[in-house]
Image (cartoon, rainbow, N blue to C red):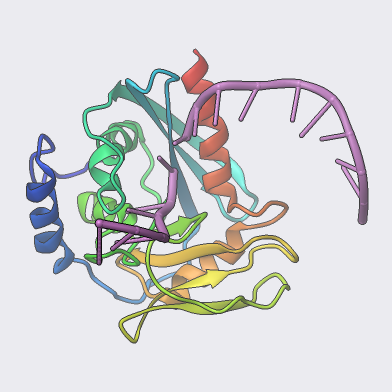
Length: 223
DNA sequence: GCGACAG
DNA sequence: ATCTTGTCGC
């Protein structure tokens, strides 16, 4: 699928932060029109020496979780890992993989935060703006915000709060298993994000699209 | 200055 | 993210 170029990627931290501030105002929180049928998962991995980054996208049919299409890409790493600036390190490779997809998913789940970010522009939101499609951030740990421990049953969740605002939820995707951090990426509402993540989660803690993308990128990294 | 800090 | 095997438990 097509993506658009919103800015350069060869940036200093200061420039990257300024771009995040500018892009954050473009994020939209609109209700998802229809229940998504085709969903994609995205994930990255790095070579042992840390010089190469790999990204993979897996498109699945939500009705039966069958894989419709997959794509992988790799390139040289050119930005360090800095909390809050993750997208400048991983998004370029992700975009490469996304551009190889022939199908256009109704929604894309990204490994990381959406608006639950210091400047409301986590990697899920950033990628959402680049592809102009609904995106959801599903992270395995917290970046910012405070929260109470959700009930231990699958489906229970607690708000993730920052400055008196609900920026996401801490969601239990499996009974008695560590919860995940879900936040809106772009073009959807928190309620959409929660239901979609739960709908995509079956046997494991991580939603199926993301889990499959993780497996695939692990393969791509090997050879 | 100290502690926190997606992947 | 990455370095890494077996092992306890349902």
